[in-house]
Structures are given as structure tokens and as C-alpha cells.
Image (cartoon, rainbow, N blue to C red; front, side, top):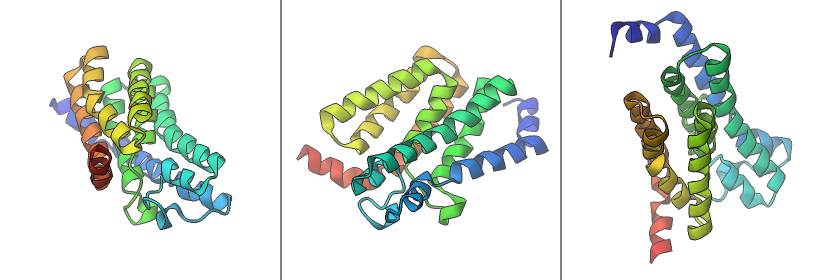
Length: 201
């Protein structure tokens, strides 16, 4: 890693950007949408996960959609701004975007707990490269159609993310970041392993 790269990462503007992205990622749209629509706290039922899938368990599809949209856009919009407005290289933008994901998973507003990061990751990936995002979403949808379990869909699609990056972008550092992205997602789904095992019994 070059000295210029390390200098960039430790620059005050970069540190401020990292903090800002983390705070954006920390916004818990599942809880915000639930409170606005007088629904129970998503951490109190189902999987206890503040995400769109769990909000959907209330039967309120609009609240689940708002959650999904909010979690996706908080990944998509900042990365688009970094790339399109500030002309930051894609590999730096992807690196910075991981702080959005970390904010979502370990929200400062939720005592460093949070969601599983699938929707936010989709937003980030679509902003980085639409082709990768489309293929990733297609894999997720096909997996969901076949297995009917969102955790299985997430694990399968993000296991394949580094290979999609390799095919469409072929940059070693971006592939490395995709592996980190995938590890974060899969690790967050480890608590669903028992459900996955039950499915295959």
C-alpha cells in the first residue's frame, strides 16, 4: 500500500467523511418506519433484526418497503456522490462505503447493534457498478425463489460477489474489499444457520 494512499486515509477530510458515512449508515430505517407507522419495535419480535424482512412480519408491506428503500439508498446515494460529484476513484469509494455498512450493522443509535446489511450492500454495489449489482440481485432473487429463505439467498449471493467483481471489474483491491463485504454479510447471518440446517433436513 503506497504512502500516498495512507496519507489520503489519515487526512482530516477523509476522517470526517468516514465519520459522516458511519453516521449515515447508523440510521435505523426499520425502527424509524415502524415508529412513524405505529408498529412494534422490530427488535421485539421475529428475528429481532431491524431490517425490512423482519418488518414485513407485521404484515405492513409499505413499512417494509420504506425500510428496504431507506437501507438501500443510504448505501447508494453517498457512493454515487463520492464517485460522480467528488470524482473519487471506485476503489476508494468502495473502501469508504464499508463504513456505511459498519454503521448499519453496528449502529451508534442502537448501542452498536444493527441490521444484517444486505439491502445497504446492494445499494453500495449498484452505485459502484450497475452490472455487478444487477447480477447480484438476480442471484439473490433466484436463490430466494428456490429456497424461500432470505438468509440462504444472502449467503449464496454474497459468496458469489467477489467472483462477480472479478469478472466485471478485475481489480485486486476491489476484489479484496468485496471479500470483506461478503464476510461481514455472512457473519451477520450466522445466527440463521440453525434455520438453514432445518431447511435442508
